[in-house]
Length: 194
Image (cartoon, rainbow, N blue to C red; front, side, top):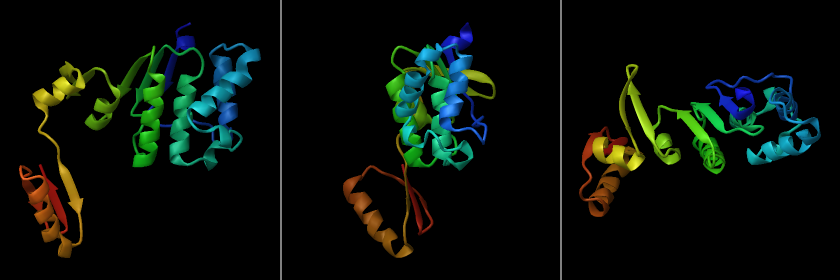
């Protein structure tokens, strides 16, 4: 019975290359014991939720990496999921697809327990109400994102890659607009400020 209320999105996409998103969700609807009369509606809702309705009949090995990730999230969400476990849901995605997955998680986390693993503090802070930080297999800190940033944060870092001929101009602008920023790395083409 736990499988009917729990969804899991593993770090690697576990998809059958010859099945379509529609067929994947049909299979998981059966596994989660969703009544057959509700399949079409539940599957359409899931595909719409992750933005895959238009490609519902395309075989999964023809989907982009971001689409495959969204399909994995849809599989985890199908049914009456109350507990959602997401293992590195945006690993390897470009910034646009990462933001799409974040938006999906933000929309669906209401009235659910969501457990998310990530190496990105930015992702953890954007999506989490509470963060647990682990290092070398041990729990090191637990708290709300603002508390952890205040306690352990080093501020923000700005990394700029520019033409060497433009680096002096950029340094001048940074000094004018962010006078407290410290130049940490200057290779000419790459500047890093804290």
